[in-house]
Length: 152
Image (cartoon, rainbow, N blue to C red; front, top):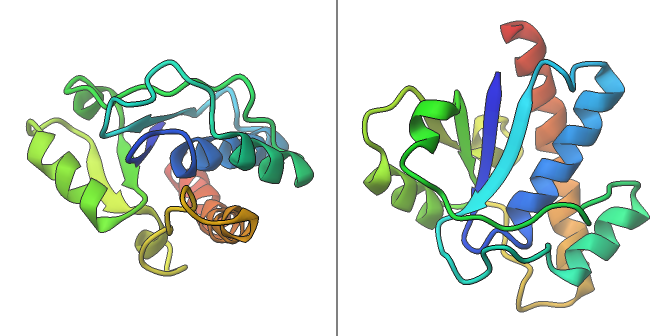
């Protein structure tokens, strides 16, 4: 199974989701069976590491985001991935506009797993926003892990 998390710049929310979910897959012994990546709909941060604040908040909970680098969503992603999970409505709309009829299923990450609607963008806020994002992503990742187990 192949999963892609998507936000706007790929430096806060989607790399956090990638790091958290990879960690959960590793703990579940499924890391070798599931490909997980993240990307942004924008290209401002391509090649850059996740936001320092996102890395620090994640590290406090045992997640390492330091090796991740931002990339932009590509048309090929709709063929390559089974599931593409957007962090908010705006990015889901951007993905739908790019979607070329590939096999990927598109959805909102939190809504799909009944955790909420959108993952709020913490970029312009304080450290508490990054903690709140982690809380939401951890909850949704647990539900996603259940779905992955059922699919595999």
